[in-house]
Length: 212
Image 1 (cartoon, helix red, strand yellow):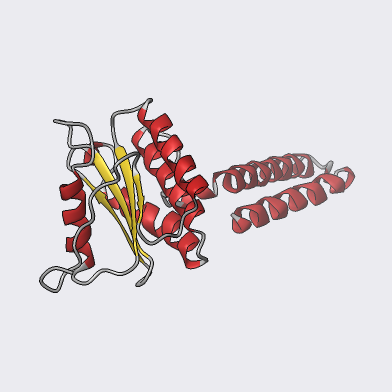
Image 2 (spheres, one colour):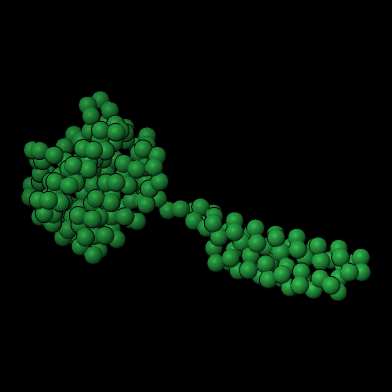
């Protein structure tokens, strides 16, 4: 602690992971480093680094921002670094995104990954899984791949139910119209089954839409 504030550790001598909190096994670190290297080979939109620490004195947001700047994460001249920071003592997390990386991975994206991917895993002490999933989500966002970190909208989440329900409902309406045509022509008494089918299709379609 320097001046009432936890000193920022030196970046890892090798790889992209510094586990000062000692919550990752050697194999966990190896796998994380390997996956980061693999994703880096396919994009220069972001360069992810990971830091875990067991307690920070001082403002967490300021500390993680300073840590990201001190480490100099990313490619020279591209400012594309992304730091995933975890304080295991206070159970707080933060994803710091450099200006260059924000072109494809915004602060809103970072918040979504933190809230929907990282924090739920860490609540159950699944540090390796949470950090692995968060890393994957970041690179998926950067590369334009669907990410578990982003909340889907209502229409996106329920598109299948809505489409199927609408089709069934409209099919029921069509069968019902057919019945009415025959009924008006004096032949409705022989097509009661059409009325039953129409009612059933419309009911099933409505229920399917409601489930969605």
